[in-house]
Length: 571
Image (cartoon, rainbow, N blue to C red):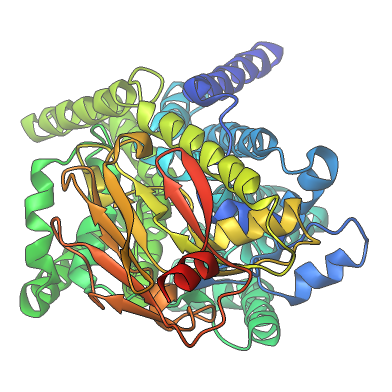
């Protein structure tokens, strides 16, 4: 027994070390994405009353893209802020540590489910989860702490529930309930935790008749489902609506299903597009997308029936149900991002380990089994090879440096401006892409909401009013973008992209229909600028431009230009 505990402790420490070392190239990284500033600055009061605000208000006040209710994440980040201030290195370390802990929990849950006493296959499951390159879209983003939180809560709740079934001690049931509550109030997808627990109770109930097993498992899990109702009530109380994205049309179910599995099983360099990308546009079509989605559901039913026919396959049946729960939820919501793969990667990693273990324990190895093992082996190799442990990913580091530089320059440019000045943001950078757009995912930089939050935090007495009027989608480092800024006369300011390979000018959504829509300004053209076609911004002469300034971002430098002085000279 002591030897077994030492072996398990060694495996756990090794997994945690791999999880942390795989992100060592990002140690010390600061401020990677735009909405992290707003999330922290929204709750920067050191008063205990801020806890009430966190429980009864949206997660941030500056958002332009989404509004959500995620109090557990906000409470934890508020506590980190009280200790370290607006030091984003500390917030990134919080993500790294949660990922390491989650990887260890995957190991222990896998060992329990697989009955893997030696722990080798459970170690493999934890390692695959720890190193999966798709997690770069989650672990590196301060604002996506909610995904590791949901994973931590789900795994902890599952472990405690398993202990309760074994020992029948109410303390384990209570702990499982509390961890479930933590997950439910971490993010909307936390509401899926009770469903995962229900399938765990159903699959391992021991009841011979499905009807009895279903009803008893449902009754047992009612306290967990009540947490979802409480979360929904608190969300509507705090937001006045359901949380979610504000301006995105829902995607087709076929597209969601394809993306869901692609993120999990095609783990090549996540900054590079693969051949599977060519199939994605076809699945946005109504008919082909529906056919693909129906085919996935049909195959899922067949797979579930096959896995339910044997007692030895019960762990795989539970893990498969776990995957399908998340797939159906994402399909119903109509939205999926690469960071949504964080929690589904847990059962995916365990399924790989289960299949390898089943092959090794089978004395009669068929050709089909050998082929499956070869494919799984190749998949595991690619996950490890393209993980940040062995593959360099410079783009996130460049993005973090650029964001820090832009916001620092913004503060310098605004420090001598009068109180209450209105700042019109010109060329506020939005995205930094790799030259190869893998998975069509961007490393988010800064936008008007982060600039406003940043200025409010460091210069609260200034009370600046911000209106975004142009933005730029950047496909290389911001300092390399060749943009031309000039006055044309008659109070017209022109922004022109001289290098279409580097960036594309466009109008921010908030400039057109947002709450801070610029007043007294006309845009030409009113839609997206394309090619070398310039964007012209005309300031109406009838408008009072006193204490109004253009805040212009030129690569890594920001400068403030008085509008009233120019328009007065033109008049």
